[in-house]
Amino acid sequence: CAPSVGSQQLVLPQVARLRSAETWLQRLLLPSRPVVFANTDYSSTQSLPGVGIAPLVGLERRSGKTHKSAVVNDSEALLVRKIINGLLSCGVPASSIGVVSPFRAQVRLFDDSVAMSRWKQDGLEVSTIDRFQGRDKEVVIVSFVRSNQAKKSGRLLDDFRRINVAVSRAKRKLILIGSFDTLHNGSTTMCSVLDHLQGNG
Image 1: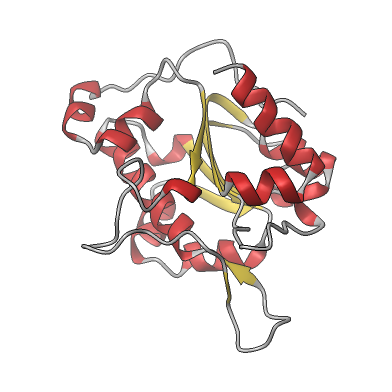
Image 2: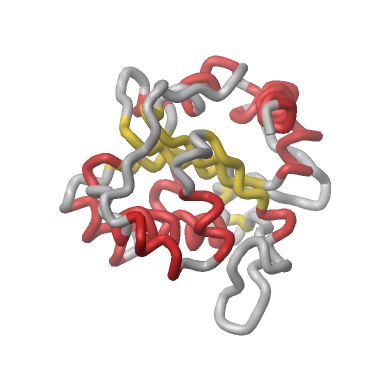
């Protein structure tokens, strides 16, 4: 399962604004890097942003009070908002951006954001991977959610068909967000995706 995008690079109409962005965001948005992986395992260092003065903690949590509650990841939701804001500031229209996640609860978490709701009115598309089948966008951002010390990713992230949809819907830029350790160790499908990315720089 290899991530793929079209042959043309993403165009940033206001690319000069990228110079004032945080270093991690500059690296993610560079048009010369059509497929990038934002590893939240390193989010307590300078490679990814902090929340205020505290380091960004990328671990998942349950959205309810029971162990059967749906899994969400607040840190990934924050990163998604920061990435979208960076794209918009560089002149990429909201209608050219799609955000997908395997988990419905994560999509609901996105929808709870005032900023995301405003961007959706401007054409941003946010959905589960399953509902994104047959669609594509100039830029696709994927939030994989699962990040835990047990390094378990669950059945959804080991579904080859579902993951193939997630990593093949971007025309010019694919941004994957997740815990390398959890995804690489917990899913054979994601292991092959990440190994492919590492092998191609």
